[in-house]
Amino acid sequence: MLNGSARWIMALSLVATLVGCATPPPEPPQPDAEPQPSIEQGELIGSGKASYYGSQHHNKLTANGERFDQGALTAAHRTLPFGAKVRVINTRNGKSVVVRINDRGPFVRGRVIDLSKAAFERIASTRSGVVRVRLERVD
Image 1 (tube, rainbow, N blue to C red):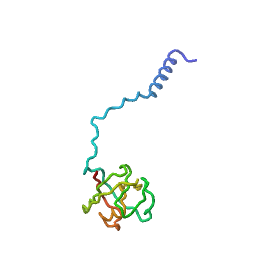
Image 2 (cartoon, helix red, strand yellow):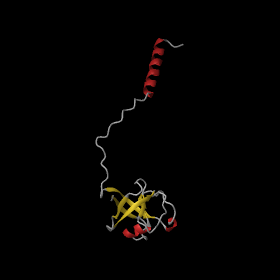
Image 3 (tube, helix red, strand yellow):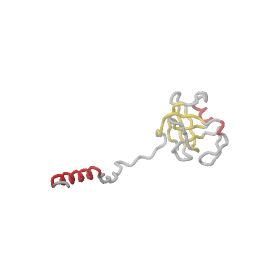
Image 4 (cartoon, rainbow, N blue to C red):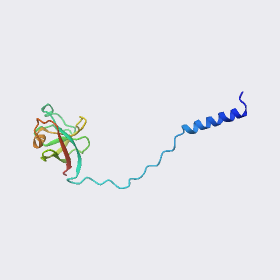
């Protein structure tokens, strides 16, 4: 059996352990300081690497339900809405092309957009395969 001071120390230890395990109450969400502005025409919406769809994708269904046409000026982007128009600018040579988003992707790390073959050919040689680009909103 424990004496009085041993019980007191044991009780304090138990209380300290329980208090140490308690989590603080969650903080209420903070309102945004400023509303985010909408993206305007010509505004930069991203940059990174672009590649193009190979011919094996020609005539297959895209994420928006239309058939992929490697001769059309279209592209795949992870988050931009279908139908959005984007100017894709090759940062090395300054050439640009306007594409319409009709698919999702790319699913390769480090790439921001997949272009149709026709769109890619407007800004670079397909032999390069991947180029660094800047994306600007058009519509």
